[in-house]
Length: 398
Image (cartoon, rainbow, N blue to C red; front, side, top):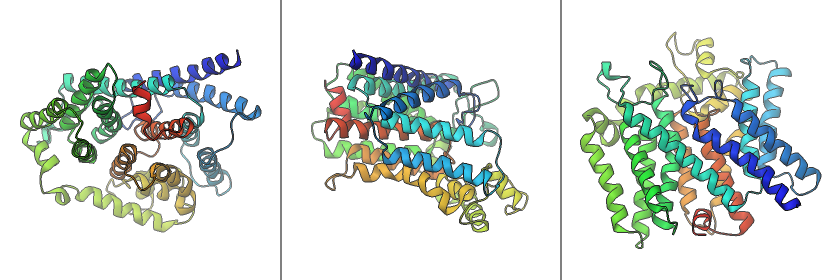
């Protein structure tokens, strides 16, 4: 009876989280913040936190390093606002805390194989929905400037940032490819179809921060595994090549051209101004405000709209070197956990791809960072609990 109760309680959290993923296209925030899309997250975190507290009281769960880092991050934000009295935007601490509590919940609960599968499938399905909407809409918000990158519109005039959209598609595309080519599931063709759809969307978006790692990891997996079906490889590669022929010339030049440094001058300037903002308050940070506001407040950008444009810099701009430690440790810890016997695993490469994409955008407190990061932590915990070296194969081969 206790076992069934445990399963039903955790299944409630899994159901809420799955719905949160599936309806991500209704986030209605340009940068996938939680301002307009938080009710489901709040409910999931409330249920997950209650489960953890119950299991902790019953000594069925212990504090792990992930929990400690999340609580340290939340504690530092409170310290920053109420002790150091740094300027903080309304609801900032609440929203950030809930996002990272979600990470703590999903990485600490003892999910069954089928529950992990449901969460992975929900993430993949949500990415396919977003990709299909983007492809069907065929809208290019920058066409007036001669730029024909596609975007996902959530209203008549508002659309999700293209780089953030691509970052959300990154991990489910790679996991879908791995399932389709390495696992013995009956639905391999469905997962392969999800890869084709997501790859086409990534091409149309034209985000190098996602395109480069996705193609590199797929190519790496193909070259090192002779058992992969050549038919599946041909379909995926045909999608990529066909997409490049169908793409506008400016997207092709952006993705595979040789003028990267020249076209990224704005981003490099953003990084420079972010570093200058860190220099103003290097240890404890400038406060929990939007990086653009901090740069403008310090008059670093000379009246021009500059921002840090980099996840790692944003942590240090806002919270300083000391306050950024728990946040950055949460980002890089999976690299250490996944590095087993000096073997480069698929998930290790996936996490490197996430970290690379985070280098290009300010994804600190957004779904496009927390969802994939939570997924990686969940798979690490699954592999540890069931003593398997490849969590995805173990989940989908049964």
